[in-house]
Length: 370
Image (cartoon, rainbow, N blue to C red):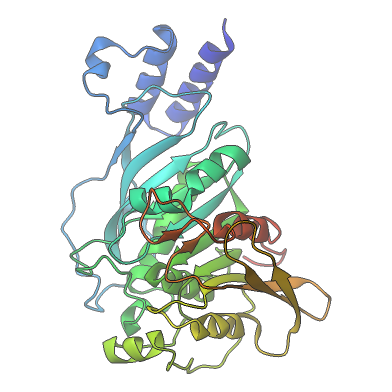
């Protein structure tokens, strides 16, 4: 019995136990045919993609403020596996999630070895005009996940919810726990956690621009779920409540009304030449996380053939690092250290992907958090 055959049969057993009989059948077929799907199955294959389809349910307008929001059991989806699993590479699969707060599609990167032990999950929220594939290409987060062993979830904003595919971080009904897009994204995160072997103490959320602003909201609203937050070229939670205040905040004229400190471990990247979202917003994100009293070390990051940066490391009274603020010199509105294969990515800066992951994995959720 080959190791590959045994792996596929173990996967089939796991899928059967979770009730995913269609996926289990596909895994058994691959095992029996030496890793080659049957002719019938192969006729439905689409590269390395596993399609995930949800039951058809009526569309809901999540921008109306009418949503009440906790994930419910009726949101469970069916999975249809149509690709041959690979022992050497992860899988990038498509899916859809719906609860009482709304419905969105998503992409999920499943790393090699998934299911052998609980792995971290990083939720990545794209910026305006982007989609999951574009964001994955620009940040190269899937490559990092393959090397380091973690899941990556890419929720996709719809043009129905926002014509420019922006997450609605500036609308009051999408800024608090239990309502609108935050509740839908929380439910999607928990759905993935319930479906796969995820380490609940290592669930993180990051985003770019509007996605960064929504990541800050999620960290503020759900500290029992997300262990740390990454905000790239984004804005602080609560800095705007409508379109006019959002435009003012993007110009650096916004102010966080509550003034409360969340205590959420947060890493910020922002270019000091960003003409879309003023770099001062990065300071507000940090202030909303740890306040202005935290001890701060300021370090210079020398350029290595690209842009330099200033790294502000914030520590609490016990000398624990609670936040980092990277100011990338000369950078505009783009993911630092990203790939030109995606939009809004600047390959010449220090790698936001690698630095965020380092910060995340240094911050598992502390004991006592539910």
